[in-house]
Amino acid sequence: MNAQEASIVLSLTVSDVAAALDFYAKAFGAEEFMRMAMPDGTVVQAEMKIGNSMFYVSVGSEDWQAASLEKGAVAPCLFIITVEDVDPAFEKAIALGGTEIEGPKDQFWGMRTSILADPFGYRWNVRKITEELSSEEIMKRAAALMG
Image (cartoon, rainbow, N blue to C red; front, top):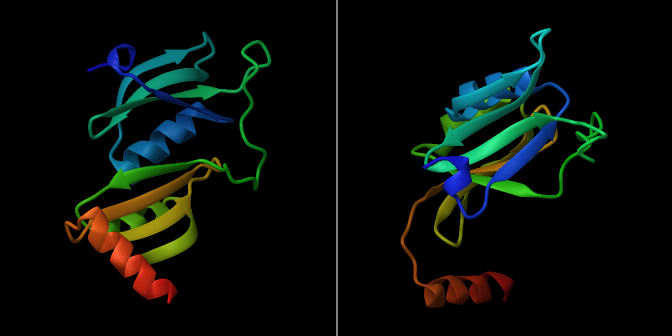
């Protein structure tokens, strides 16, 4: 599957596409499929894949009415990645320049989750399903937790 075949494809706008490609490849195992560069070598857009999900990374442009997040800003959206082992995946992303928002912990809905911000301000939930639960069981646990 390529990005043109998917129903929804994300496009992340960053200040430095090459640095973002490097981070996503090293931190999340993203594979790069296409890279578009200017004659001076500046990367302006790329297509990547994590698992079975495609996404674009592009540089901000007034012509496209797209701006990267200001330094220190954190995006309101959250991207979710399911991994085999949350703790080392989270620690690897932090070591590569991510910022911890919430360290790994077990959740009542049957997942181990963590949240980090990448160096470009996008939030990522790195998670693993630890229990297969019905909606009824999740609601029962939520009610018990909330008293």
